[in-house]
Amino acid sequence: MARWCVVALGFGLTVVPAVRSAEPGPLLATIKAVGREGRGNAAAAQAWRELVKHGPKVLPDVLAAMDDASPAAANWLRAAVEAIADRALAAKQLPAESLEAFVKDTRHAGPPRRLAFEWLVKAEPTARLRLLAGMLDDPGSELRREAVELELRKAEALFVSKDAAALPMYQKLLGHARDYDQVQLIAGRLDKLGHPMDLTAHLGFITRWAVIGPFDNRQGRGFHTVYPPERGIDLHAEYEGKDGAKLRWGEATAETPTATADLKRHGRVDFNDIVGEQKGATMYAFAAVVSHSERPVEVRVGSNNAVRFWLNGREIFFREEYHHGVQIDQHVGKGTLKAGRNEILIKVCQNEQTEDWARQWSFQLRVCDALGGAVPLTVVTPKLPPAKRS
Image (tube, rainbow, N blue to C red; front, side, top):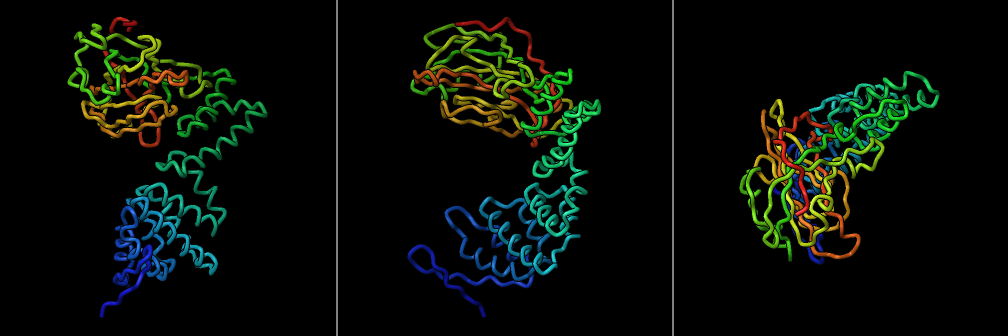
């Protein structure tokens, strides 16, 4: 006989079938089916209660379910882990061995592995240092950062004591660090130790571009207008631009400041320096790069302007918003590099605001893996005359 549960939703009541199962699978499926605006929450709540009753033996299953869960479902699942683990820890029944196996299984996503790690450490505090020692190259940033941080503390102690061993330690950690605060700390220390580095190149910023413009963006029309560069790249072509100007491609070089400079300056191309300050204008930048292998990548852009960008002719990101502040990696598009030649195109639109804080018209772009590590590339964009003011 089916059982039913009455659940209050808003100002009324609804009746949903109670979810009961001797196995966690159906319960997890119900929780993972939750959708937007509360869809499926009533059934998920009932499934959650039944899932928690299964106790610590289902923790690996619940953690694994977080791998591909939606944000809403992940919240339900995390709460289930917390409830089960809290009771198990109090009863000294937390399955440390299975949690450790989950942490070490890098096929799982970073957030659930981090969650398992935190509960494991609560049960076995010595596990923290023992596990982190082997996680400098962990594919999950959630654990990798802490592993790097532990080694950085050792390097800092050597640096303060002026021990020569600090230099090779910083150089080693540079290859493992992915978070910007850690990377910049290492870069700053290497600079002070007499070994300055090219942080722009280390982070994977493209610094040589072919640029063309300005095209019209008055009343915002340029963002949605398909100008010639979007239909195909011909670096020898001439086009009609804003107010009838004749436009040709020219070469522009991005900034490569010192390693300790603001990250927003690394790889920055400033269109105000190239074509002069313009309002209601659109610029394009193009780069051809060679990869030695096919691989998934992220194209990450920082810009204070409206942007669209493409990888090998496929648009992978767009955002039509102006003067919202600029941060490194604030816009992320995902794609695949082919083995051999690849093309990257970015469109950057300036609007017609006249305030002093609305003058900025620039971008920075880098190609990296999912953790932010630079992907080895060679820029093969043909040499062009320097870009000049229209």
